[in-house]
Length: 242
Length: 242
Image (cartoon, rainbow over all chains, first blue to last red; front, side, top):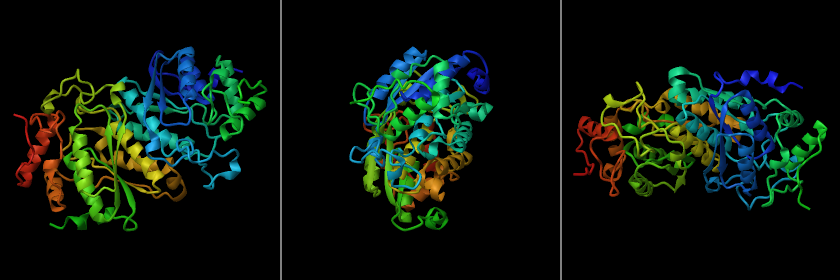
């Protein structure tokens, strides 16, 4: 497997260019950070304390940022509980354990209204302040949960906006919003991450991990992750709660 | 003057529909809030404590939200100083007092990287959680300061994004991002606001107002505001520092 070959389209214009990488602490964005580093960017990792159910994914993000070589890691406080509307930020709503019990036809209750747009916008602000032109975003549209803001057309539209919204975009039209794993299956992401040296035992994907970062094993995110390891033929390193 | 006639294009689909209104505490967004209320929406006002130089514009926003009939007013904490890159959030940078001393050809140092994109994204999150479809934004591209994220093509692009980013956008394609004063001169905005009963003495536009909300009288924003009152033939109600 030569994963770098297929990622050359995401290469920096110049080795060492700064790039902002959205880092959740999960499996997907850890793989993206490893890729960004390997491609020769100087990575700035960005995470959010937005009112999610647990903070162990942020602990994971900090560890991953250090291990995978981010030059700086910022955790932004932005309380999305003020708006409500999602099981991830509203503790009174119950998390679904399978795709069947979602109240909206295609979009599940774990969808956080405009979360990716808000995070990408903050990444755009940091990117511009750094005089950089690249943002990396670990969206995935294959083994995903039906979120509208994880689709290729959404990412493309944000890139268009970014070039109208910023100084560098208006003057040079050079802002790029990369979603390098958007078309990969979970098992392909896992294989790629392993080839890049990602230790997935450090990542937390579970929607309701405990304070030690141990996973519930039954939520949608746990389910997709576990199937991914199975399909990749890799032992699942996730530590599950008993 | 019959300002409502020309604003009918911004009417709600149904009287009483909720709309999120970005409210800075300045002259422009106060006028927009008055307009939204007059058009028959139920307005939800949204402001940000993003690390701006003074909080008197937020005090003004709270007062305006109450007086002009917002059903709810949220002030979101989001520290953009973490990113830097603007004289509005970086106290080590000096504020320009005229258009001549801006370091970038067209875009001044008071531009805050991606600020409007970040604020509109948060408005989008609240809008979606409210099951609403309308956002109002007081951008102005006439007597403005050369910010890329105040232009009509930017607003249109955000609307396109909003319809790809959200549940209601994907399912019904009905999200509207309105910038009703974008093509008006400052004096037209002032005349419109007065016809709608806005008390502009409650608004704070100054980039460096003191804690009482008194204006410096020399920054770019004070300059544009004062000329606006002159051109509108209206006595400037701004209280200036001595």
